[in-house]
Length: 190
Image 1 (cartoon, rainbow, N blue to C red):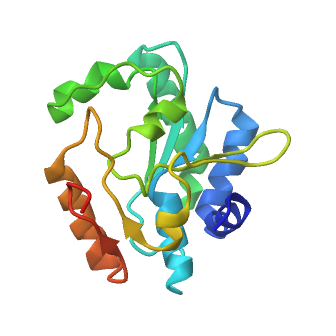
Image 2 (cartoon, rainbow, N blue to C red):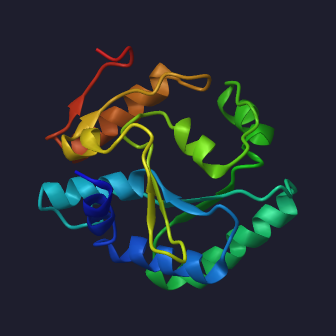
């Protein structure tokens, strides 16, 4: 699967398409639709399920050097208000702030990020290391590990500073229940 094919599949989900449109209008700094809502849409298309099957929420990353909770909360509220008509859960996170709350919430280290794609790089699975964003010259796909695991329906761990085998296994178990076609690699990558 190449980037154009992936983008076409991800935007078959009308929620992803609507979010992309809203991100384009708002011009948030370094804003991306990321992770599960994209990958799971692709899995749904590949397995001929409803495009929104199994998707819990839709994640948006952006990067604003203002790390105050008030600034992030204003963006969260604005996007939730503008996207409320979609009837889905929208999760918005300023990647410049993650290092401030992640260690307390998850008990794992999380060095400060310098851009949104660094947050994508740290996802729990290599499979979900993906984002799309609208740009003036067309939509862009970021997938540092490529798109083959998505197309082949392989869930692969992404060992790193914030990796948790327990979190990986819980997520993979949920996904395998929803998409039994998946091949889930063990937390050690085998």
